[in-house]
Length: 107
Image 1 (spheres, rainbow, N blue to C red):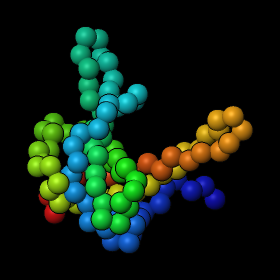
Image 2: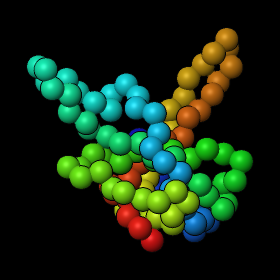
Image 3: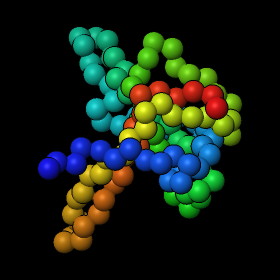
C-alpha cells in the first residue's frame, strides 16, 4: 500500500493559524511558456499556536487573484494535506514535511 499523503487533524496538529507573509519562490512553482512566466503555486509562511518552534510553510495552487491578508491575521486552509520527502546528507537521514492545501481564506 502506497502512502500518498496524510490529512492532519488541524486543531491538534497545527492549532490556530495566522498569516506570516509570502514565502520564497522555489523550483517548480513557476513555468516558462515562451517569454511569459506562469505561476503554478504560491507559498506562504504561517504561525501556529501549537507548533511554536517550527516554521510552517503552506503550498497553495495559484489562482488568478492572489489572496490579501494582514500580518498575523487568522486564516484557515481548505483540504490541507501533508506529504513527506526524505533525503540523505553524509549518511544521515532527513525528512521534510510539506503542507499543501487547495485554498487559503480568512478564518
